[in-house]
Length: 325
Image (cartoon, rainbow, N blue to C red; front, side, top):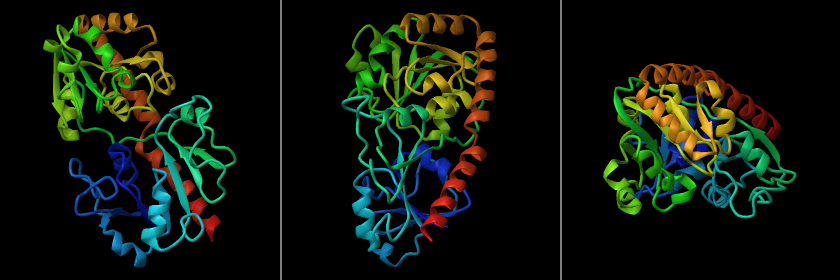
């Protein structure tokens, strides 16, 4: 089928477009948030085609994937068809709720013209979607080419905008780990992190700004362990990707991470000192790090493999298309 969707979350979209369908991705001259087009840091397959907004009125579109509330009106305007009525729609919610948790009302609550897909069971539990149809389709990841070596006695973090989102991302916790080993931070908006955290931690933090995914994964695979310190996030795909590479993970025990990382696959705790002690252990014991990482890889590929992810999505897409007919 022909599916219209915006390029919003790179890793999720990269997995989604590996399917058997034809994907139309809007592109605008400025490649802004509503016209980012194809990924430029990861090779997407040829069945992902960029379309200009002006082309959509005559384009054959079987279904629309929505990911932001304003896309309902935007898609209706660009297509010249009412989304949810004239063309079936699925709304994918990537994020944990904000505001008056756990009473946060979802912007697509109480709608009978679309299905809300949550990417984790935690999100489905905490969002109030009212009478809207809901489904949980857990994340899937493209298996990274890199494999764990852990030859560097350093710790890795992958995060976006840790200065602005300081406590959300757990950036304020990083200094506690710099006392154990140097910490390398990858992502968007990370260059100002050492200055924001200040001495003495700053000298032990090295930021790597917006590194292409394959190159970043190859570097993360060389670090002894991966730190996932987010207090309030849906489920960082970088965590799953690290596990899939066989990197041992040290994880703050919040949100969906509790279900994604069993005790055999990583060290999970809400007591930060427990995680700091785990970092000491893995830095000092490379063999233990390899054993833990091997189990993390097995767990990640079994639960978040691409085949399961695409099969779950194909089932829902077919249901929505048949229902609309």
